[in-house]
Length: 83
Image (cartoon, rainbow, N blue to C red; front, side, top):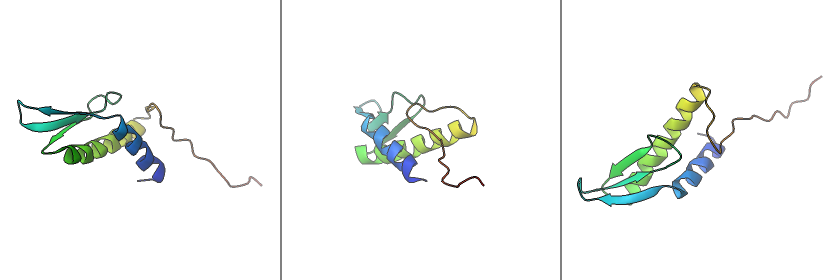
């Protein structure tokens, strides 16, 4: 994982929402801007770790399908000179 990807995931985790779901007796978390990115676990930290993995997978699939991800760019900067 690149530094840029790690930074993006951390930024998205700051936007995550967490709630204790009494019906299942676990914490749940989601990121509204990423449909289908949802996790549940015994505590908020385990949910946060699962969300990070889900966001990474979301990015990977989006890149494979050549779909844009809001707030993330794959533009590569070339420092090589053309001769």
